[in-house]
Length: 293
Image: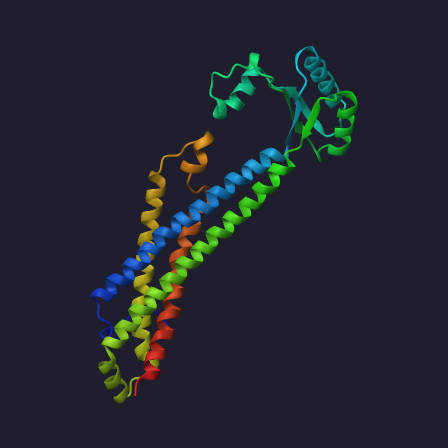
């Protein structure tokens, strides 16, 4: 069925204006607009979770609970031990300012570290295939009993799972949007077919084929959907560009956006929406025509 070549005779079967036209265009535009944000939310949140997981995958933390002179001795022992541990690129004790910055979101910037039993943290960066975490724990237990290794495994796994679920959520939302579009287009096509039922009967009586009649409805509703969804996608992308970006702690809430090749993905939605409209209208048209006496 060639939708690019209009047939003036068949086009008269479908009213060019009216409620059905605006319903189709508005529904397709709204669904296209919403699909931009469904994709943006899932992709940006998934990328953010991936970055967090990647950052945690190459770093570890050793917590030294001892304080005072004992704490300094154990910190020195831990650093010497890490220097001879295969798979570790670097290790350093975090300063008071860095620890204060880590605790500031929960306790404020005026946290008196000198008066609180804050454990010393040692940041470890891996290289190559990483290190033997179980072997390192045993060595720490022998040489620095107050040191506890956190290899971030309990943080990486939930983040990886969250990234996968967010992506699945985005695709599920997009599927629902396209399904809703198909339902609305079907209702609009059925209404248009019902309002022209008498004309359809006359056309069949004078020898018009069902395929010829259905083509007029399929072409008009498919092109309306393509136009509406394209306008909705363009509007959604413009709005997305106007959303202010922010890095740091607020990135998850205000960092909605697309990057790189992700900007091309929304433009697939009008094509898919047009295919949905084509299928829905064709099924509705032949169902109505087969039901005519």
